Length: 48
Ligand SMILES: [Zn+2]
Image (cartoon, rainbow, N blue to C red):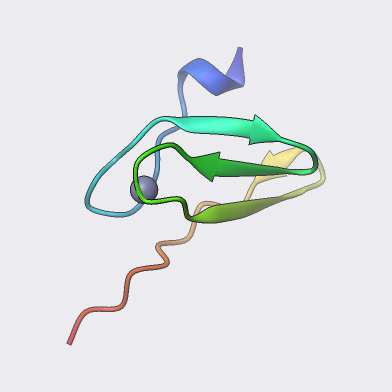
């Protein structure tokens, strides 16, 4: 399963939970939309 491989792109690298049409990080709660069946894993934490 894809769910087993992907992780949060934020520093916590938490596991992602499939929720509806998106993935939600179980650690920081960031939400990632799925486009064409592929989760868009862009970091949501801004540095600086
Ligand atoms: Zn996270």
